[in-house]
Length: 115
Image (cartoon, rainbow, N blue to C red; front, side, top):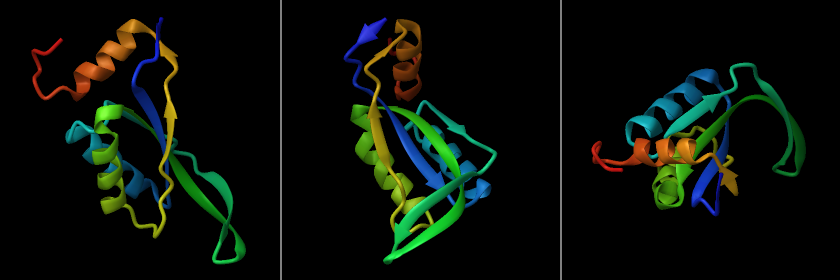
């Protein structure tokens, strides 16, 4: 187990499964994320927007990345997302298996022979 990893999990919600899949594929292809899990069953979101309580069906993306890719990932998500204010919540991975964290880092490396 490795502590203090410099790796993050980013939570993003999307109004459609199609948009969620488009964002997921783009950020993995651009090596901004090693992996994106998409909840294909919608979640129900209750939130305040423009002084009213709203309810929506959304699809949750769970994105795995590194601190060094985080700003570029956020720019790409914001560029592609249809919401005025997309969710972009970053959670630090405090601990993880050495093998998984190495895979995550290697997946984001532009040099395939690295590490």
